[in-house]
Length: 428
Image 1: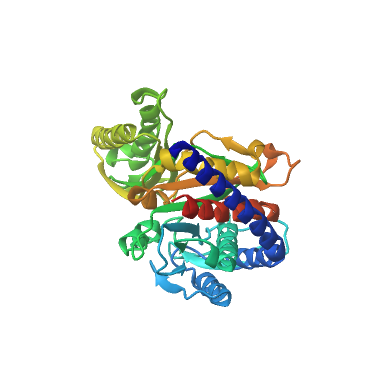
Image 2: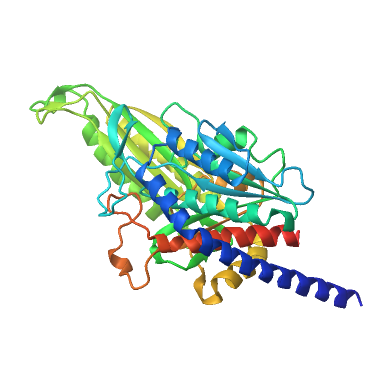
């Protein structure tokens, strides 16, 4: 008898969810043109991390038009709104990142960004080279659809529009870490959180995810080397930081290849920037390098950091050079809760089609959504951003001038976020 009661309850929930599927699809169709237009506006008005002033103002305006009472100035430029405030039941958090990047856009579209901003003290072009404009539009659409059916669903939904996912400017706090610090997961306390990322290398309509680690931890660092300046014709009269830097760069590449159990998880150590010297015939006094570490296993991360310090300080010492390592941006592993994964997978397959939902491998990109997942169960997933039939081998990667994701990806994002929220609220 108890089994039959449970079965009846389960069938009722599924039937109820499917009823909402029809409503959600209808509301998507009614609003899609407006949402695409909104996405184009965010793209055209891209702003850098912690400087998303126009962006957050527009988000708040749109939320007020829907009927929300948004909070602004969260973690500097973030916006938060709550659906069904005070209503009994579970609380779902939904997050979108809103910042752009210091990249000059080359995509041939009428709504290309011509924005500029200040980055490291210089005026630079700014574009949405990672799809955050689409994430923002998707979450606003989700907020509007859920508002339309608010009386039919239990619990509350907290919409989190997060600045500075790409990293706060030097000397500033920002991003998910600051939002958590300021209490964004409290009052009301969020039970589970969902986030997505559009991906140019996947076809629109597809959803890719995995349980446990889906994106790498990141540890960014700066290495400063100080020697003694001298004439390039007499290098023995100085101490050369450039030769030392070259030896360090080469030696750092042995960390992954010689110190890590790579059958367990991937890892990357990269030096992406070297600055030193002004002339061909002057050995400079100092030099600095910028690098990043990506790891998918916490024990391996510990090994990488230990070996990094051993190599830098010992190579520098062998060349009679002073060395200093400064750690900068650091994100934990983006970790999908395995139990929540089992709960949400049927929803994603139901609303997107089972053939469109894929189990992916972990990637070495990083996401500060991981700070939310450190506190509460969360699911992060990818949606495809390229039109069907596109040659994916020729698609521009993220963070590049030719990056582009197609508007056809938006519906998958809205449908997924809305349905995950409804199902979680009903099931819990």
